[in-house]
Image (tube, rainbow, N blue to C red; front, side, top):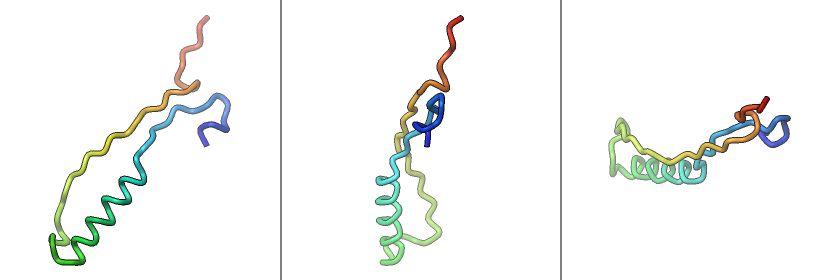
Length: 60
């Protein structure tokens, strides 16, 4: 979507595939009884800021 607008929009690239894999592994561990369902784990994944024309200053 950000590439079809004018100007192109700045966006955040999140690691969706890695997030899905982590969630699936965590769910399987819960279903197998390896970790309690109420476990509150914090997992930090790196996102990338993709700066495009919408965030650039216009020179006057």
